[in-house]
Length: 220
Ligand code: B16
Ligand code: MG
Image (cartoon, rainbow, N blue to C red; front, side, top):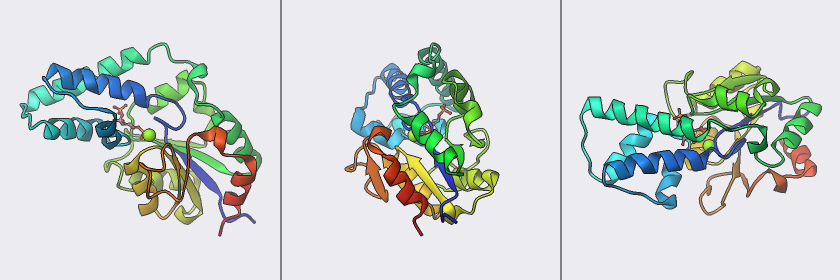
């Protein structure tokens, strides 16, 4: 029997390149406040909740806003983000996601999504992958954001697999930390310079071949 029984996929930046739309929407908000931030700062916003993202941007620039404005800015960011992804379709699935999914399912692995996003389900529907997963745990289900392991522990529970038998694919520092805190194998999707705490790092799924997946499934 293989040791690994389940794979949990982060959504934004792993299954679909929504990370660029989150960045654009947050930049608009920052600029409306007379502030700005770059791609390097943006790494800190990946994988963290909408509320935490706004707190970070305001902190970087020492900006104080009222509770009402805070809520208005969150709402505006989500409106801008939803407008950017309105025409998203299956062509925006990141390369080889469907090949990796098919391989894992063909090898009796359970597959789940573990995302901080409250928009995860509609996005999965748009890119026609919602029905491919055994479970979806997202920002509407969890109370503690990554790097807390809650989202991945809930996903493992929903697919009925112990945390130490799960593997996570993640593009964010906070997500890699969450996977490790959950006691899971963490595979980074992105840059090794950024995802230093991951067990393995690949630029994208095209670099992950079936031999590697086989090896991971049989890792003890
Ligand atoms: P929403 P993931 C995360 O999704 C994004 O990486 C992060 O940038 C975003 O702020 C967060 O979802 C919340 O998203 O505003 O749609 O609820 O990478 O965990 O799939
Ligand atoms: Mg992500």
